[in-house]
Amino acid sequence: MANYLIKRILMLVPLLLGITLITFTVIHLAPGEPVEMQTAMSPKASAASRARLREFYGLDKPLHVQYGMWLSNLSRLDFGRSFAPDNRPVLDKIKERIPITISLNVIALILEFGLALPIGIMAAVHRDTLLDRAISVFVFVGFAVPTFWLALLCMYLFGVKLGWLPISGIHSLGSDQWSFWWRSLDLARHLVLPIAIATFGSLAGLSRYMRSTMIEVLSQDYITTARAKGVRERVIIYRHALKNALLPVITLLGFSLPALIGGSVIFETIFSIPGMGQLFYQGVMARDYPLVMGILVIGACLTLIGNLLADLCYALADPRIRHGRG
Image (cartoon, rainbow, N blue to C red; front, side, top):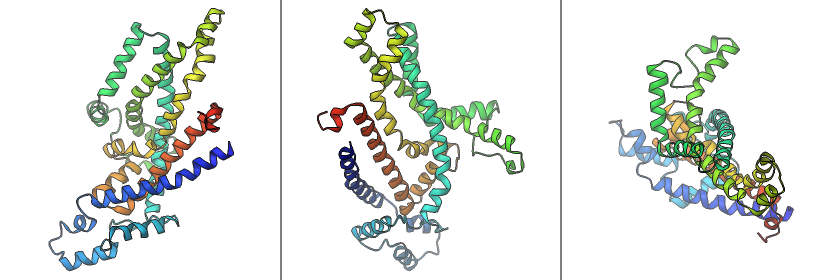
């Protein structure tokens, strides 16, 4: 197991380098430069001032030289300074925003798996019944409805029309003067819509995936044998079938780690939540290369860690994988 773990960790280094090289190149090839974005609305900006800005940001150097300098800084865990007017370190900006994003997505992830797994099991156990068809309709609606459109509808209905929930930010104006419990209640009211939208966006796919894996496991010979021996159906489903049906879901759980940041861009921007998703969107719009690369590196690391955790869980569950025979 130790040799398998070492091999997988060593493979992460070239993968991370390849990801950073591709993303760095693509970002710099995108139309528009930070200098153009900053001076476009300034009629007094001369060609000389633009050239000085490009030199200040290091954009006058060849692309491979810029990448080498960025990679050298990254080896010291230095993400550079933002191209925004505040010129703050990228790491400081990320530290401010990342707790909000992770908290929101962890809650949404718990709700997503907590709801999708029972729904998928229920649909598989009652296969081809009215309940299964009703769940299928719900799933297909979840696939078809765009997340941003659903978010706008919910904002209009619950925020504007009914006035039940706030539609932007995470705190009300003046809430810092309230007691702890009122602030907590205010925070919860602000997070209901974003968390519900984030959960619903992934609930459909995961529940459908759980249904298909559960149906496959329930058709296995050992399940038929257990039923022939008179084992109770509840024991068969939750003790024998569920354990094996959850193994493929491990992969989805591993891939859910990068979604802690990447999946936040839409709903954090729509609901004006000051998290990593909103910061990433603002960085892309402003062509803030160091900020965008810093967030993408974190996302890439989460993706690789998620893959590693999924592989390790598989290796623990199936010895053939860790011995290279699976």
